[in-house]
Amino acid sequence: MNEPDWAPESADTTRSNVARVYDTLLGGTHNFAADRDLARAIRAVEPHVATIARMNRAYLIRAARFLAEDAGIDQFLDIGSGIPSEDNVHDVAQRANPEARVVYVDNDPVAVAHTKAMLTDNYLAAAIRADLRRPGEILAHPTVRNLLDFDRPVAVVLTSVLHFITDEDNPPAIVARLRDAVPPGSYLVISHGTDEDRPGTAKAAAKVCGRAAPATPRSRQQILGLFAGWELVEPGLVYLPEWRPSSPDEACDHPEWCMMLACVGRKR
Image (cartoon, rainbow, N blue to C red; front, side):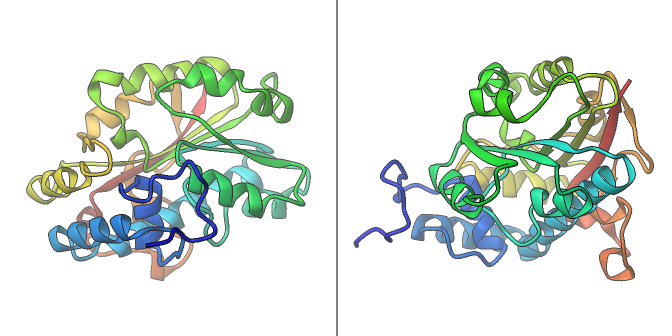
């Protein structure tokens, strides 16, 4: 089959990718057959996975709105940002403050190419291709250094990405490296898969996701450990729909079924 004309030359269309599988679950169109196959396999384990993906997206929007409108943050470093959807971080932030600056980071060439295309006329937002497992390279990247001022508070956004970092790659050390690079008053936004309340389903889904990238659901205590040096913002570490729902439609009678915990922290 011919590759779609929007596919960058560096994209491997034969292998699934986390960002493109997520795009599939959100109803996007910038994905390949391998990504759609994996999305179907995940649905076979957890039929509500697309709803969980939308919950994660809604949490990101609520967190970005809180930071931009209530906390006065005007700089965002969104790592593992994925393929653009509706209401991206820069959309939310720049509605609150037209001078807000955002850098998106992803390791998938499709995600980066489409983010760059979306930002063509936005000189205060940019996208780079880099890997969270090498935070020093992200922090030293010219685009990051030129657009963000690390003498002022920055929001570091890590939604639905850290569970794709293995224990061997030491997620706490990665987050600590990012924490040490930003000044007090900065914020950390995390959502992370957990096996705490539905261990069988979480582990089965993680095994299937492993076709795209190793997935490691973690306990509440392990996820809390990522916030060393950060003061938790109310309501603390909770399931996605429990983090400041903006309407009754975003709430849930049994939030634990989403298998994703969320939290925002402020650097002391």
